[in-house]
Image 1 (cartoon, one colour):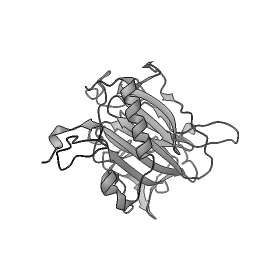
Image 2 (cartoon, one colour):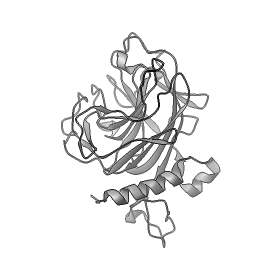
Image 3 (cartoon, rainbow, N blue to C red):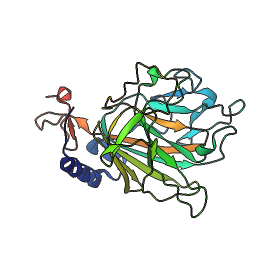
Length: 291
Protein backbone atom coordinates (compact mmCIF):
# COMPACT_ATOMS: atom_id res chain seq x y z
CA UNK A 1 0.00 0.00 0.00
CA UNK A 2 1.32 3.44 -0.91
CA UNK A 3 1.99 5.72 2.07
CA UNK A 4 1.03 9.40 1.92
CA UNK A 5 1.78 12.10 4.46
CA UNK A 6 -1.12 14.28 5.52
CA UNK A 7 0.59 17.30 3.97
CA UNK A 8 1.03 15.62 0.57
CA UNK A 9 -2.55 14.38 0.57
CA UNK A 10 -3.90 17.83 1.43
CA UNK A 11 -1.81 19.42 -1.34
CA UNK A 12 -2.99 16.88 -3.90
CA UNK A 13 -6.58 17.26 -2.80
CA UNK A 14 -6.41 21.05 -2.91
CA UNK A 15 -5.06 20.95 -6.46
CA UNK A 16 -7.67 18.40 -7.50
CA UNK A 17 -10.53 20.34 -5.94
CA UNK A 18 -9.43 23.50 -7.72
CA UNK A 19 -9.15 21.79 -11.10
CA UNK A 20 -12.06 19.38 -10.94
CA UNK A 21 -14.89 21.04 -9.03
CA UNK A 22 -16.96 21.46 -12.20
CA UNK A 23 -17.84 18.72 -14.69
CA UNK A 24 -17.38 20.15 -18.16
CA UNK A 25 -19.26 19.60 -21.39
CA UNK A 26 -19.15 16.36 -23.35
CA UNK A 27 -16.90 18.00 -25.96
CA UNK A 28 -14.28 18.70 -23.27
CA UNK A 29 -14.36 15.28 -21.62
CA UNK A 30 -11.82 13.78 -24.02
CA UNK A 31 -9.24 16.25 -22.70
CA UNK A 32 -10.00 16.44 -18.99
CA UNK A 33 -10.86 12.79 -18.32
CA UNK A 34 -14.50 13.05 -17.31
CA UNK A 35 -16.66 10.11 -18.37
CA UNK A 36 -20.44 9.82 -18.16
CA UNK A 37 -21.27 6.60 -16.32
CA UNK A 38 -24.93 7.21 -17.14
CA UNK A 39 -25.47 7.76 -20.87
CA UNK A 40 -28.94 9.27 -20.47
CA UNK A 41 -30.55 6.43 -22.43
CA UNK A 42 -30.29 3.12 -20.56
CA UNK A 43 -28.61 1.27 -17.69
CA UNK A 44 -27.02 -1.51 -19.74
CA UNK A 45 -23.66 -0.75 -18.10
CA UNK A 46 -25.18 -1.29 -14.65
CA UNK A 47 -26.30 -4.30 -12.57
CA UNK A 48 -29.15 -4.27 -10.06
CA UNK A 49 -29.08 -6.14 -6.75
CA UNK A 50 -32.22 -6.02 -4.60
CA UNK A 51 -32.60 -7.70 -1.21
CA UNK A 52 -34.51 -11.03 -1.51
CA UNK A 53 -33.67 -11.33 -5.23
CA UNK A 54 -30.74 -12.62 -7.22
CA UNK A 55 -28.10 -10.29 -8.59
CA UNK A 56 -29.28 -8.88 -11.91
CA UNK A 57 -33.00 -9.05 -11.07
CA UNK A 58 -34.26 -5.46 -11.25
CA UNK A 59 -37.45 -6.37 -9.39
CA UNK A 60 -40.47 -4.20 -10.15
CA UNK A 61 -38.45 -2.11 -12.61
CA UNK A 62 -37.07 -0.35 -9.51
CA UNK A 63 -34.32 1.33 -11.51
CA UNK A 64 -35.56 2.73 -14.82
CA UNK A 65 -34.61 5.41 -17.33
CA UNK A 66 -37.21 8.00 -18.32
CA UNK A 67 -36.71 11.49 -19.74
CA UNK A 68 -32.93 11.14 -19.57
CA UNK A 69 -33.03 10.41 -15.83
CA UNK A 70 -32.38 7.30 -13.74
CA UNK A 71 -35.55 7.02 -11.69
CA UNK A 72 -35.99 4.90 -8.56
CA UNK A 73 -39.67 3.92 -8.27
CA UNK A 74 -41.87 1.38 -6.45
CA UNK A 75 -45.21 1.60 -8.29
CA UNK A 76 -44.81 -1.97 -9.58
CA UNK A 77 -44.09 -3.49 -6.17
CA UNK A 78 -46.56 -6.02 -4.77
CA UNK A 79 -47.41 -5.33 -1.13
CA UNK A 80 -45.34 -3.39 1.35
CA UNK A 81 -41.68 -2.56 0.93
CA UNK A 82 -40.57 -5.66 2.86
CA UNK A 83 -36.93 -4.56 3.24
CA UNK A 84 -36.36 -4.71 -0.50
CA UNK A 85 -33.33 -2.44 -0.29
CA UNK A 86 -31.75 -2.12 -3.69
CA UNK A 87 -28.58 -0.94 -5.38
CA UNK A 88 -27.69 -0.30 -9.00
CA UNK A 89 -23.99 -1.00 -9.54
CA UNK A 90 -21.82 0.31 -12.32
CA UNK A 91 -20.05 -2.65 -13.90
CA UNK A 92 -16.51 -1.22 -13.64
CA UNK A 93 -14.67 -0.96 -10.30
CA UNK A 94 -12.51 2.07 -9.47
CA UNK A 95 -9.88 2.93 -6.87
CA UNK A 96 -8.73 6.56 -7.31
CA UNK A 97 -11.36 8.86 -8.74
CA UNK A 98 -13.56 11.95 -8.56
CA UNK A 99 -17.27 11.12 -8.69
CA UNK A 100 -20.11 13.57 -9.41
CA UNK A 101 -23.83 12.82 -8.94
CA UNK A 102 -26.83 15.11 -9.23
CA UNK A 103 -29.95 13.90 -7.42
CA UNK A 104 -33.36 15.04 -6.20
CA UNK A 105 -35.97 13.46 -3.96
CA UNK A 106 -39.51 13.11 -5.34
CA UNK A 107 -42.80 11.51 -4.33
CA UNK A 108 -43.71 9.68 -1.14
CA UNK A 109 -42.09 6.89 0.85
CA UNK A 110 -43.37 3.46 -0.21
CA UNK A 111 -45.65 1.82 2.41
CA UNK A 112 -43.74 -0.40 4.82
CA UNK A 113 -40.35 1.26 4.31
CA UNK A 114 -38.64 2.23 7.59
CA UNK A 115 -39.29 5.77 8.79
CA UNK A 116 -35.61 6.68 8.69
CA UNK A 117 -35.58 6.17 4.91
CA UNK A 118 -37.87 9.17 4.26
CA UNK A 119 -35.97 11.39 1.82
CA UNK A 120 -32.96 9.15 2.33
CA UNK A 121 -30.77 7.53 -0.31
CA UNK A 122 -27.11 7.55 -1.29
CA UNK A 123 -24.28 6.19 -3.38
CA UNK A 124 -22.16 3.26 -2.27
CA UNK A 125 -18.48 3.04 -3.20
CA UNK A 126 -15.57 0.69 -2.60
CA UNK A 127 -18.34 -1.92 -2.59
CA UNK A 128 -17.90 -5.65 -2.90
CA UNK A 129 -18.61 -7.06 -6.35
CA UNK A 130 -22.41 -7.35 -6.77
CA UNK A 131 -21.83 -10.91 -8.01
CA UNK A 132 -20.70 -11.79 -4.47
CA UNK A 133 -23.76 -10.30 -2.73
CA UNK A 134 -26.01 -13.09 -1.51
CA UNK A 135 -29.75 -13.20 -2.21
CA UNK A 136 -30.65 -12.48 1.42
CA UNK A 137 -27.89 -9.96 2.08
CA UNK A 138 -29.47 -6.62 2.93
CA UNK A 139 -26.59 -4.17 2.40
CA UNK A 140 -23.41 -4.48 0.35
CA UNK A 141 -20.17 -4.27 2.30
CA UNK A 142 -19.20 -0.77 1.21
CA UNK A 143 -18.91 2.88 2.20
CA UNK A 144 -21.89 5.16 1.57
CA UNK A 145 -22.14 8.83 0.78
CA UNK A 146 -25.60 9.32 2.25
CA UNK A 147 -28.12 11.71 0.70
CA UNK A 148 -30.78 13.28 2.93
CA UNK A 149 -33.29 16.11 2.58
CA UNK A 150 -34.86 18.29 5.25
CA UNK A 151 -38.16 17.21 6.81
CA UNK A 152 -38.99 20.19 9.03
CA UNK A 153 -38.24 23.83 8.35
CA UNK A 154 -35.55 25.07 10.68
CA UNK A 155 -34.40 21.58 11.69
CA UNK A 156 -30.97 20.60 10.40
CA UNK A 157 -30.67 17.42 8.32
CA UNK A 158 -27.36 17.56 6.44
CA UNK A 159 -26.60 15.58 3.30
CA UNK A 160 -23.34 14.09 2.06
CA UNK A 161 -22.87 12.12 5.29
CA UNK A 162 -20.79 8.95 5.62
CA UNK A 163 -22.42 5.61 6.51
CA UNK A 164 -20.59 2.32 6.84
CA UNK A 165 -22.41 -0.98 6.20
CA UNK A 166 -19.86 -3.66 7.05
CA UNK A 167 -17.03 -1.12 7.08
CA UNK A 168 -15.08 1.31 9.26
CA UNK A 169 -13.31 4.61 8.56
CA UNK A 170 -10.78 6.74 10.39
CA UNK A 171 -12.22 10.10 11.38
CA UNK A 172 -10.31 12.74 13.33
CA UNK A 173 -7.40 10.37 13.83
CA UNK A 174 -9.16 7.20 14.99
CA UNK A 175 -11.63 4.58 13.86
CA UNK A 176 -15.07 6.05 14.49
CA UNK A 177 -17.58 3.57 15.98
CA UNK A 178 -20.61 5.40 14.59
CA UNK A 179 -22.45 3.89 11.65
CA UNK A 180 -23.02 7.36 10.17
CA UNK A 181 -20.98 10.56 10.51
CA UNK A 182 -22.79 13.77 9.68
CA UNK A 183 -21.33 16.27 7.26
CA UNK A 184 -21.34 20.04 7.68
CA UNK A 185 -23.60 20.63 4.67
CA UNK A 186 -26.62 22.86 4.53
CA UNK A 187 -30.08 21.30 4.74
CA UNK A 188 -31.86 21.07 1.38
CA UNK A 189 -35.64 20.88 1.24
CA UNK A 190 -38.16 19.83 -1.40
CA UNK A 191 -37.35 18.39 -4.79
CA UNK A 192 -34.42 20.64 -5.72
CA UNK A 193 -31.43 19.14 -7.52
CA UNK A 194 -28.34 18.71 -5.35
CA UNK A 195 -24.81 18.15 -6.64
CA UNK A 196 -22.78 15.62 -4.65
CA UNK A 197 -19.12 14.82 -5.24
CA UNK A 198 -16.75 12.30 -3.72
CA UNK A 199 -12.98 12.37 -4.21
CA UNK A 200 -11.77 8.90 -3.33
CA UNK A 201 -8.02 8.22 -3.15
CA UNK A 202 -7.85 4.45 -2.77
CA UNK A 203 -7.57 3.39 0.86
CA UNK A 204 -6.20 6.75 1.97
CA UNK A 205 -8.27 9.94 1.86
CA UNK A 206 -11.99 10.41 1.04
CA UNK A 207 -13.60 13.84 0.67
CA UNK A 208 -17.30 14.67 0.32
CA UNK A 209 -18.40 17.85 -1.47
CA UNK A 210 -21.96 19.19 -1.69
CA UNK A 211 -22.89 22.00 -4.06
CA UNK A 212 -19.24 22.99 -4.34
CA UNK A 213 -18.44 23.01 -0.61
CA UNK A 214 -16.24 20.46 1.17
CA UNK A 215 -18.43 19.00 3.92
CA UNK A 216 -16.65 15.89 5.23
CA UNK A 217 -13.26 14.20 5.13
CA UNK A 218 -12.03 10.87 6.49
CA UNK A 219 -9.51 8.16 5.65
CA UNK A 220 -8.57 4.48 5.67
CA UNK A 221 -11.87 2.90 4.57
CA UNK A 222 -11.75 -0.74 5.62
CA UNK A 223 -13.90 -3.78 6.20
CA UNK A 224 -15.32 -3.96 9.74
CA UNK A 225 -18.24 -2.86 11.87
CA UNK A 226 -21.79 -4.15 11.63
CA UNK A 227 -25.15 -3.22 10.03
CA UNK A 228 -24.71 -5.41 6.93
CA UNK A 229 -26.37 -8.83 7.33
CA UNK A 230 -26.61 -12.08 5.41
CA UNK A 231 -23.22 -11.77 3.71
CA UNK A 232 -20.75 -14.53 2.86
CA UNK A 233 -18.38 -14.66 5.89
CA UNK A 234 -15.46 -15.22 3.54
CA UNK A 235 -16.00 -11.73 2.12
CA UNK A 236 -15.98 -9.85 5.42
CA UNK A 237 -12.34 -9.72 6.44
CA UNK A 238 -12.34 -7.11 9.21
CA UNK A 239 -9.42 -4.70 9.07
CA UNK A 240 -8.80 -5.19 5.35
CA UNK A 241 -8.24 -1.80 3.73
CA UNK A 242 -10.50 -1.06 0.79
CA UNK A 243 -8.29 -0.05 -2.13
CA UNK A 244 -11.03 -0.20 -4.75
CA UNK A 245 -14.55 -1.39 -5.40
CA UNK A 246 -17.83 -0.87 -7.21
CA UNK A 247 -20.08 2.19 -7.21
CA UNK A 248 -23.83 1.75 -6.62
CA UNK A 249 -26.87 4.03 -6.53
CA UNK A 250 -29.19 3.24 -3.64
CA UNK A 251 -32.91 2.42 -3.31
CA UNK A 252 -34.39 2.42 0.21
CA UNK A 253 -38.12 2.95 -0.36
CA UNK A 254 -37.94 6.66 -1.18
CA UNK A 255 -38.37 7.68 -4.85
CA UNK A 256 -35.35 9.58 -6.13
CA UNK A 257 -33.99 10.81 -9.46
CA UNK A 258 -30.40 10.82 -10.71
CA UNK A 259 -29.74 12.96 -13.78
CA UNK A 260 -25.94 12.90 -13.81
CA UNK A 261 -23.41 10.28 -12.80
CA UNK A 262 -19.91 11.15 -14.01
CA UNK A 263 -16.44 10.02 -13.02
CA UNK A 264 -12.84 11.08 -13.52
CA UNK A 265 -10.39 8.23 -13.10
CA UNK A 266 -7.32 9.43 -11.18
CA UNK A 267 -5.25 6.26 -11.62
CA UNK A 268 -3.30 5.70 -14.82
CA UNK A 269 -0.05 6.10 -16.68
CA UNK A 270 2.07 8.83 -15.10
CA UNK A 271 5.04 8.51 -17.47
CA UNK A 272 5.17 11.70 -19.60
CA UNK A 273 6.82 9.68 -22.38
CA UNK A 274 3.78 7.42 -22.78
CA UNK A 275 1.01 8.07 -25.30
CA UNK A 276 -1.69 7.77 -22.63
CA UNK A 277 -0.03 9.97 -20.00
CA UNK A 278 -2.41 12.36 -18.22
CA UNK A 279 -1.29 15.19 -15.98
CA UNK A 280 -4.27 14.79 -13.63
CA UNK A 281 -3.46 11.22 -12.56
CA UNK A 282 -2.61 10.93 -8.87
CA UNK A 283 -1.90 7.20 -8.62
CA UNK A 284 0.49 5.45 -11.02
CA UNK A 285 -0.51 2.40 -13.03
CA UNK A 286 2.68 1.52 -14.94
CA UNK A 287 1.13 -1.54 -16.58
CA UNK A 288 -1.38 0.68 -18.37
CA UNK A 289 1.28 2.77 -20.13
CA UNK A 290 1.33 2.64 -23.92
CA UNK A 291 4.35 3.72 -25.95
